[in-house]
Image (cartoon, rainbow, N blue to C red):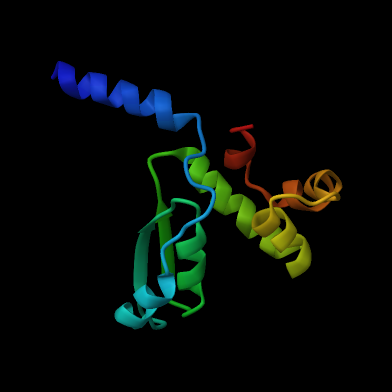
Length: 124
């Protein structure tokens, strides 16, 4: 149907090439209490900025699947995971909490980028 095609094209033009969310404002702690996640559970969450999916991992479920129509949101989650693996807390918080870190360029190319998947690197 023409209206669906137009709607899809509008969505793609606005969202597919833009990062829409860089942080989540929900409180996933309440979700974790309600869901009572355990080692046998599997969770699927909209990626958004990746904050909620990372929070759910704290309860150590068997799997957390993060999905999003916008590939840049998934890339942001991958970037956050790579930073968690390669940076200390202060550096991570400077990048994602304060939004700036004077050593970001050096850390990104020296430590973070090598951890990113080819799928994410192709989005650059």
